Image (cartoon, rainbow, N blue to C red; front, side):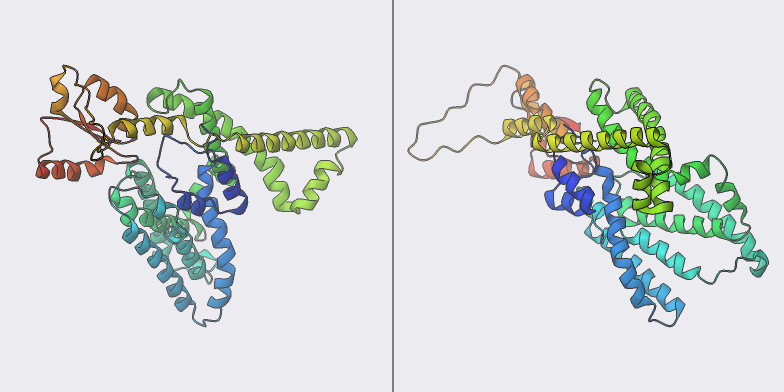
Length: 406
């Protein structure tokens, strides 16, 4: 249900605090049972918090006379953030805290700041650069682009490597690619500046902003199309077809006018500028109507927040189904368990799983009485060996093992 937690999400979006509100509320970035409408705004929150702190930090850095000492200080902050992510990450657990945290995910911004400070004195004249550096830096940048493509295709979000240096490696490769591209007369820079890459880059903010809400709304509108396999590709294709025009329109009529002219001049152009009376009136009416509808829809959605998703309700039913029976109090009436059905194979089965297993628990217990189920939300496949070994050591392992993990 896309309405669950919408009030918190809107508050986080308007205050650029989505990441910390999600951490405080225990909302996982990785859960698929509750695809939040504005989940992708966590990164904008981290950026905005950086924009608030960085100018003050820069004023302090400017008091340091040596540029390379300034580079070293910011690099040390980046290393500290990388170390914090690696140390706070618990293999096999939910990585939301280290993924969302400004302190644990600020190394990308800090590495970018290192590059900005280090490149202050770079000459804009190609011949001012040593010949070997003119040949080496774009080559290294191209290799970094290749590394980024390889990591984007191979690095999983549940892999310990991602949080123990993988994401930091992505940021360092990105900085190297930028350095190789911005060098004067760089062939890598010319290659990355061609169309349609330039068009995509100019609208990348809008593409990121639009793509996730569109995808979540499509999943809610088309529940018979699961977001995996061929149907997942179909959903992605529809989302792509909606996202690209939406990003192009917002870039043309919202982002660029405000960026070039500011809010006041843009609003005057929308509602009182020189487009002619009727086009201006129509634009104003459309804008007011859209704002009113969006506002009313948001308020209505927040008020009607059901508090839990359908998947969460099913998971809670599964948790209740596998909970141990209450211990009778001394002197109370004797509690007799109902006789199990004649399905002896149930007591030979141990099931270990995640939220899907929890949701399936009532049906499993009905079909296989006596089955032992060990399931928790957001459990990853990487935790299975340790769980099975612990079961074996304690003598709880059964002849048939059922694993249901992501």
